[in-house]
Image 1 (tube, one colour):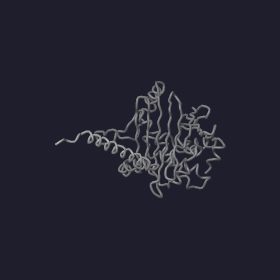
Image 2 (cartoon, one colour):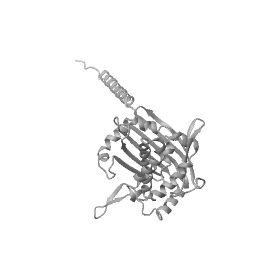
Image 3 (cartoon, one colour):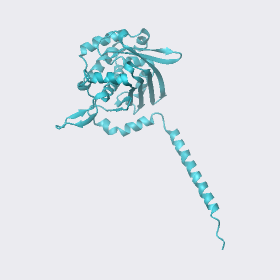
Image 4 (cartoon, one colour):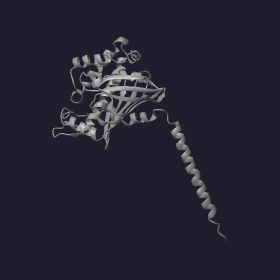
Length: 309
């Protein structure tokens, strides 16, 4: 009896294999297409749910930081009691961000506008105490609305250069709706640094910044007390937290009458920073308000008009 040739069986097996691979690729593509805007951030919320519910901040907040050979990055994830529609409307436009970014101590002025149909935002970064704008360093950001849908918002601010040889600044803000009253936020802040910036940072950390710490617990002392991250990771965590608290204070202030909002957000930002005095305390409330009132008053007229509400 003649045995059937194995070649047709081999060809059929190869054909079936190709069909299975094609079907798998098709399903993968359909799954990618089916993924809605903001699904990745919602998945992050699920992954962080335990930390968001129980942490040292006594609020649904998680902070992360990382350092590579020439880059620092901080990330804050937080749930806020604001509907997504409020967050979206408040933080879509470049000029609205000046109301947020002017709040930290070392921002002396924020100027927003358009140039060749591209959004621009200029920050003047200086000392943490009162200082003329002319003596501060100007960092020019490009503003981009990276994503906008009924339940997802992403804003990117990027600048190629910064003070003391720093470079590749990137502030990323992303938000998704969780339910009718809450939103989940992700704020990322990063920049690159070279030799000059490294030397300047070492000088700061060896003098006025030597006792500064961040928020991440890296160890426990013999008595059980937490040991917090320090050095440059401590720096990036403090700055990222200040930006998050500025966003939160800005959103909270929108419930006040328009003529009260700036004063309210300044006070709320300062109060929020004082909850973490080991990391964020720099001055007393009276000094901060005196300084910030002057800095807000000298904001460019078009920025003040655009952000009055």
